[in-house]
Length: 162
Image 1: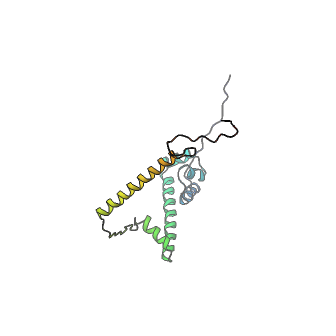
Image 2: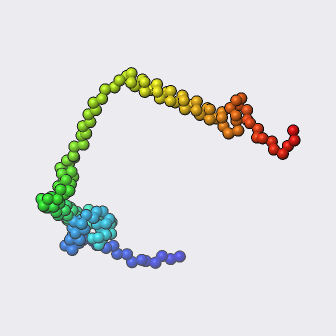
Image 3: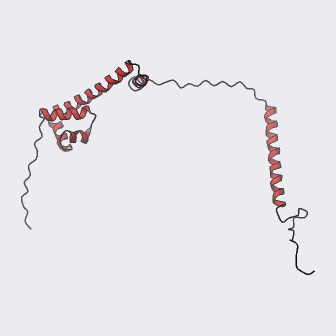
């Protein structure tokens, strides 16, 4: 088996103005990593190699990300200034770390009587005892029992001679 020569020529990726603009625009839209590389027209490995050898590529990404964040922040602040309460709350929460107070004031003014509590507990015990007795009676007086001696009552014999 013979090997044939395969023509291979690696792509030379350079930080041209068009490529830097593509990186900037993709980063401004919020893309990161492999998605940013592919949207910029490069393979992820090519983009990483370009960032290693040319700091302008990484600077274009940082500048695009900063400009995208600035645009979104400006829109949010404009909405808050126009009276949008939700936008103002979001700015307070996410930018300034503000949280609304969640304190709850509960006041209970009730006296507890030990005698009354014991009476209620004793009443519950008595009610529970009655339930046990009723359950036992229901089992003893089940259908087919007469309740006198607990033996089953035989059904009347019909058609048999004595």
